[in-house]
Image 1 (spheres, rainbow, N blue to C red):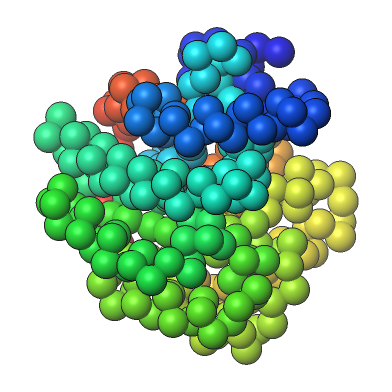
Image 2 (image 1 turned 90 degrees about the vertical axis):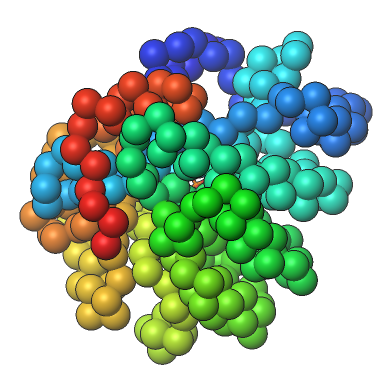
Length: 284
Ligand code: C2E
Ligand code: MG
Ligand code: MG
Ligand code: MG
């Protein structure tokens, strides 16, 4: 299938096309070489400030694998493979480096100090040198720590509470902010959330897609936004696809909106063109 992504057409190799284990074996071998061959690329999806309509509050970096034969392979396919075959560390290092390089390139090109979020895997939380690596990349590329956000899914944060608290504290100490991704899919408690130095809560797409049809979904999202605000967290809604969803979320006081309704993830040069004409929210 061909998907529309930031104006260009990409043939995406999707999870449901993933077939036998033979194919997975060959994919993982190729994945190991993908970094060296320069086949990995980050696409960027804007996050929009909900109150000051149209202002870009930041972007999320989403990894793509531009496979020489299969075309663009979706992270839904290769991230699980990378985790299973021990390649995720290599990919994670590349993402940190590339995101920092891109922040600096955009800044030189006049885009200003845009905030960029990267996704961290559970494996990375357990890397001894994760925080040093991030700190070193920030310094080498001259990036302000506040420009980098690390997104970690709620379920991962709960897998090993001690590690999560230690790593989050160290990230916060170097000035990097933390977002809890896919919130609502796990069962973290209020007291647990209070103890994490996170700045953002991203409400999972499944709740957003049900907003218009389901009173229950509206009640949950409303409650999550109130809870997050009581804990001084900013709330990001992911997967916003319609004007109706946007309006409900703005009415509930959601802070930032992200989804196909505003923009799809796109290559860095397209993001630059897209964002250049728009007001960039001052860091805060
Ligand atoms: P995520 O971090 O929750 O990212 C949001 C996903 O939702 C992205 O899928 C994005 O393209 C998609 N999305 C955004 N807006 C909409 C919308 O309005 N409707 C729908 N249907 N989808 C929307 P993508 O890029 O395929 O990434 C899937 C997941 O792969 C991510 O979920 C994240 O968990 C993982 N991932 C992506 N890049 C990386 C990375 O660099 N490192 C790690 N560890 N994981 C990554
Ligand atoms: Mg994310
Ligand atoms: Mg998410
Ligand atoms: Mg997700």
